[in-house]
Length: 392
Image (tube, rainbow, N blue to C red; front, side, top):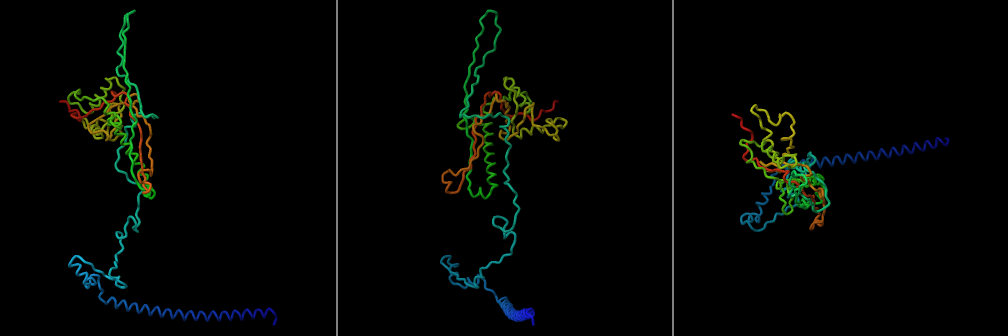
């Protein structure tokens, strides 16, 4: 036998031996699995028998257990004292609670497991459109006080003079008027955690706090009385409209026209806007003639609010039944902005730093300079008719 045959014979013997050992191990595994299966079947059989026995038994309730304890009975009767209930092992089943899984039980909010659809952004409350600043002229300033000189007593009119005669002397008086820069501000406290965890809230606070500063500004521009830290608004400085000068059966639209005439008669700047409450404006807008046609424009067309060429500004910042007519020309009045609206966040307030709180502050600084008060007329629609009665 050559060398190759010897090596081949050795390999074959080795493989035969290995296969025999593997076959023996598999046989042992099969026997072990059979034994395990017998044990599992026995356990399952015992478990089923136990369940049948337990199901046939009358289970004890927590109330039954408490009824058999004298200390609990005395506690119920005397409404005072002390009672102890010891539970261990299978006794804990007396206080187990099994509840059907429902949407309500799992909860939709906070840590509930049911998913919800959350719409982005926070829906703000109802807010009016702020327009008063838009009809006035605004310019910046770097000073704390705005001062201007106004003619108090104008010169008299010149007169014809004969040749070589003494010319009449004229004179005038000036007055200096000052308006102090005022601050309009507000702030709100918030925790750093809520601002970090809810980005929508941070954005909402940023826009909301700005709006309420601008709202205060609009009210001050119209009605500020000039006392303390209030602006000196347009309405307190405007000329008062006298409705007694109107003829009988005059309407609210007639009052607007008469106020325009009043400004022109005073030789003041031509008005450019008319500020009304929305109810007053729509009371005029819905007027019809004797044929049922709308006086101020067909409702199917887009009508720019206007009266006698003036831009009508409907706003709830003016009281119902009142109006203001004036000019947006800077010669009549202007806003001087010392500081535009600024929103700042800081922990430098009391103990905010150690409490992880922040103060969100918004403020602006400005002055309203009314140079020609007679360019503005304010009045009331009280006692005026909505529409002219038809002629007999």
